[in-house]
Length: 445
Image 1 (cartoon, rainbow, N blue to C red):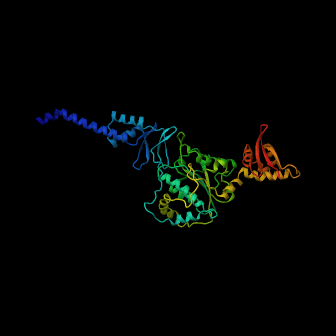
Image 2 (cartoon, helix red, strand yellow):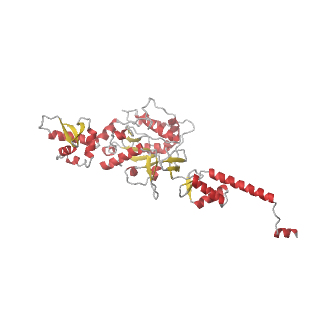
Image 3 (cartoon, helix red, strand yellow):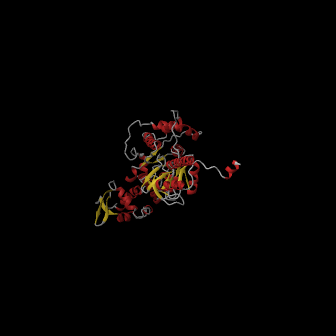
C-alpha cells in the first residue's frame, strides 16, 4: 500500500538536497559558460567562427553555433545560451576575415578594425636533424650566371628572410624577383616546386596583376605569386600595368581582398612575386622599365647555361627540401651584403637584364630614334651643337618616313615621360621651364 501511495504521491525531496543539487548544477553551468567564453569563437556581424579539429576556421549561423555550444560545453538553452552568444557578439566582434599567411596571430588590427586570421596554408617545416640535400646544393651552386657568382648569396639572403620570418610567425616584406634564363633550366620548377612548395603553395597571379580579374581570393591566400614568360608584354600599356602592379604590391602591403559574392576590403599581404622568363627578345620584354621608383623593389637574376638532372626531380626535391630548409635557417653569407631596414638586403640587378630593360623601354627606343632624326635634320647645319626644343618640336622632328612607325608608340604623354628619363645623358643635357613650356636641351651632334 505504501509503495502505491509513494507512486501516486511521491515523497517530497529534502529541501537541503534540492538546494545543493541546484547549486551544483548552477556551478557546472557557470563553469561551462566560462569555458565557452574563453574559447576562440568570433562573430563578424553575420556568422560565428570557431576552429575545426583540423585547426581551420569554419563559419556557423546562430542556430548551429548554439547547438555546438550545447553539445561541446553543456550549456543549457535559455538565459545562459543567450548570454554566451551575446558576450561573443559584444566582445569577440571582428570586422571581417582574411588569410594572413604565416602569421601566428589570430586577430590582426587593420585600419578598419580587428580582423580574424583564417589562413590555412602550412609552411614546410625544416628537418629535425641535419641531412644531405645534394641535388639542391648543386642546383643553388650552379644555376647562376658564372660572370656574376654573387647572385647566389643575394638570392639565398632573399630566401632566408622570406622563410625565416614565416617560420617565426611574422612574415616580413621583401623584393619581387625576376629570374631569366634559357629554356629547360628549371626556372618554373625553381619558383613553384622549391620556393612555392616551401611557403605552402603558389598561385599564377598573372591575370590579377594585369587587372584581368578583381577576384583575388586565391592570390591573397598564397605567399608566392608566380608569373611565367610574357604575360605582361603584349603592348606598352599592358607592360606598364604589369610593372605598376609589381611596384604597388611590393611598396604597399595593403592589397584589395575581393572574394566572389563578397564586398571588397583592404588588408595586409606580405608575400613575394616571382617572375620567370626566357632570354629571347619576346620573353625579356616582360622586364619592367627600371626607373628609380621600382629599382629598389625588384631584383633581376640571370641563370647560367647549366642544366640540372630532372630524373624523378619532384620526388628528389620533396625529400631534400626539409634538410635544405634546416640549413637555410642557420645560413649566413660568405661576404657581408648591403642591407636596408625595409627589405633586409639591398636590391640587386644583373647588368645584362638591366640594360635590356632600358633597351626595350620607351626611353630606350627614343634614344635610338632621336640621334637618327637629328642626323637627318641637322646634316647641313654645321653651327649649332645643341638646341632647346619642346616635346612638340621633337615629335615633329621624329615625324619622317623612316621613324613614323616608331613615333606611333609615343601617344599621349608617353613622349614626355621618355624624354624626362633621358635628361642628363648624352642626348638630352638638361630640362627647363620657359614661357610656360617644358624645354629640353638636345645635343645635335
